[in-house]
Length: 459
Length: 170
Picture 1: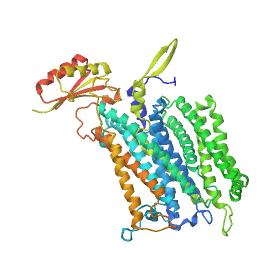
Picture 2: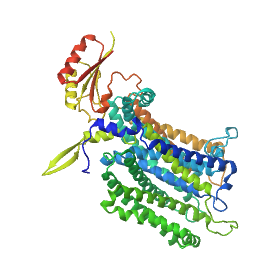
Picture 3: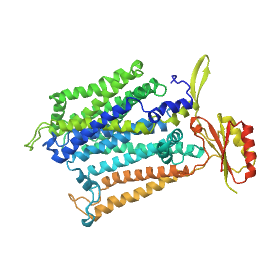
Picture 4: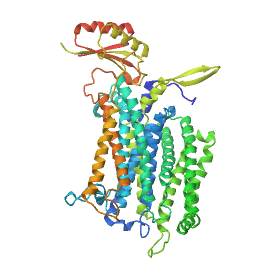
């Protein structure tokens, strides 16, 4: 951590508010193109709702396909926010500072996107209301709380609400900053949103203590959310490959792997697009890659455990499923790509500091991880359903249709669109955290070496 | 007699701390002066009164409310429409625990956020005298008083401490 150079607060304001106070040249064309793609995606969703699920590749016996895979994928990505923000806040990790806001934001937008998938997957989205709200009080019909399909919206709703509030509370000082730097309607907007923030010791104390309190509260929620998502599968005894007791921790660690990788992707883009070289430095990628090596290896351990527990019992249907997953075309090809992308290519590369501090390599390896992690979810969900089982006389291999692929691509455009839209109005890097780091860091001489030292208050 | 405010602006923490000490010595009441900064300085850096708060009560109350609502949603709705499935008890404790856990945590988070905002004395739609340079690294010491004769005292404290600028508001 010796790459820091002293930056004054005026410079920090100017650089980190460049998205809000000026509009970068690339912003409008990019947002416009994404906007068009988002509209096309919404149009395709509308066609699917109108025509019914027949336009998808879903057919007996595979009724959970690309949509549910993508739902689990986006819930996984959402775990980046709290993992990074809460854990690093609680442990007072200095390198968290430029990362937290983007990670929290990714949580909120990916959760919003994830929620779309079960909704459209139902075919008649308006009927979802029947599942999750008491819809017929006269006849006393209430949601079936025994169903994991109710646990999901409750858990995700809690996580989304909590993450949004967490994001807002941490934004308050920066909203005050934006209020001070803007005029006209923007000033009025930030004045209202900043709630009269002034930056007195009471407000700063509550900001610090509140951040730690919310982190501590959000962490158990974060663990519960992906556990509950995993139970959508794990509590189904009839499908081989789904019914596993280790699914909850396996899903949570997989979510962290994919979420932290998504943060790396986003950090690289932020550094390149907004030219934040002074704030998002190679040392941050180095720290994230070290974290990823540990997380990815733990995740690989769970992948291995899941496999070994499945085959060790010598249960014929389970063995048949694993054979299909790993040795039958096209699943074997997907399985190899999945392992290569999620672990075998990126992790050995991250062992080298030259790679960890090379932003382009970190960007591409983090994208590889998420390709692999999407495939992992696909390989968990689909083969278990598509395997030919006794007493099922109608089956077909699942081939996602163009509609499903379009909606998958739409989800990526949608999250990026929301992020860019957010970046026009709110800073993606917490300014006060950056400034705090500058104020409380000083160089000390140890022998003849000049070393940056962090001054920290004793608890 | 109207309430007046005065803001002294400093670029370094030491003179701002001197101004705070000076205001104390000049007899300004504790709570009538405050320091405004763009970053969180360590507690007591300006010799200010260390703020007390009751934030930790909020999540506890929130959790109790959330837990109570969750019991209502899970137990009462199952009892209101009692469908016996497979000879199992009407109340499914494992499933109830999941919903109860999530609702308890949700209410705890919401009440914590309410607590953070309330204890920060926000929203404050009349925040008083202020300067945008505070979010550029300047440090503001603000003092509020009713007695016009104290203007000179406050000004003298700020000048003595080396304020770069003094702003008035009434």
